[in-house]
Each structure stands twice: as structure tokens, then as C-alpha cells.
Length: 240
Image 1 (cartoon, rainbow, N blue to C red):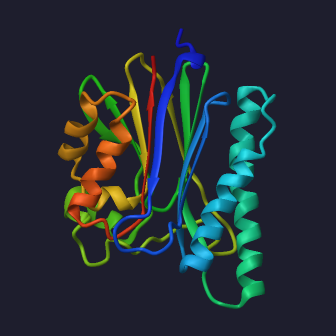
Image 2: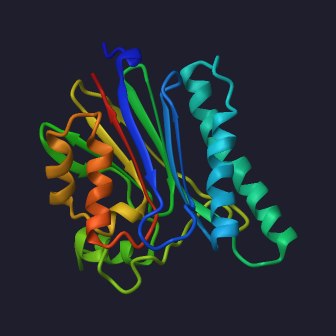
């Protein structure tokens, strides 16, 4: 049985080399087994508001909930944030406000992930990396059709065109996956500020052997070396 209290993580967010404001938000609630990355959109006055609201709403979840109730609470919190952001955008009258989100919860030997947009979850298992989420984006359809790989999609002119986000549209459809944890699993949650500069192989090489204390900084340095044109947020979670 995996001991949730022994799970270790490293989380870091960087403004990048060009942006003046960090519109990403990250959240780590290790006692509840919850980690979140959210990437704001709509300009700095709106993007950072949206991503922070998502993180803050999830952070307000009752920490005494049983795992099944906690999982439902994460989903509900994201939906609540969606409604608040929609109302705020209408009140401001300045156009779209929104944010991507990827939220992972672990409990009782399993993980569950909710996401909307192109913030991602990867898993390193037995030395090999796998992308567990699938972007809600224009280029994702091309990937699923077999016309290009995810690495190639990052170089596509429409790579930043997402088709789903918290705060965008009347209803928010969250995707969900769940699976079994294995001892030695390493999970990576990140915004596209990392993945637009790092191929699958680069990510695998970077996180396979890096100690938990330095792995997030190592990943951020890859994005900065590649140009760092966006905010960069990473959370790495190690399953004992």
C-alpha cells in the first residue's frame, strides 16, 4: 500500500523571459493529495485573476473530506470558478477571461485528474514518459487523426489555439481520467510554457534521474534556454 504521507513533490512557477506578469498559478495541497496548475488567458489583468481564482477555489475545499467526496469537491470547485469568471468577464465588459487547468488528486492507491485546455499531466513509469491528458486545442485533432505527433504540434502555427478553458462558454466540460498508482511513479503537471520548448524525449531525459529537490528548476531552465516566451509552471510529484 502506498503511503500518501510519504509522497514528495516539487513545485515552481517562473514568469519567463518576455512576459511582464505571471498569469500562471500553481497549488500544492499535499495533505489532501491535490496538485494544480492553471494557465491564465485574456491579458495580464484577466489571466492572472482567472488562474488564481481557480487555485484559490480549490484551496478552500474542506480538508476533512473522505477521498470520494474530495474528488467531487475538486470538480465542483473548478465549475464554481468557471461561473465566477464568466460573471466577472461580463461585468468588466473587456472580452474573454479564462484559464486552463490540470488538477490531480491521489488517494487510496489511485489518482484522478481533471483538466480543460492544454496544461498537461505526464507520468514517468519504469523510465518511460507518457502523456496522460490530451490537449483541448485545434492541433489536438490533427494529432488524434495521426497527421502529426504532439511534439510536431507544438511547432504548428495554431499551437496556442485552445478549444476549451475555464471561464469560456456557458458550460464547462471537464475531462477526467483515473488510474492506479505504482511505487516509483513520477508525475509532471505543467503549463504550455514548458511543453512548447521540450519534446517528450527532453522531458523524459530531464526527469528520469533528477532528484526531487531540483527537478522543477531543471525543467524551467529547459524552457528558459529555449526562449522562455511564456510563463512556465511545473509540479513534479513522486509516489513512494
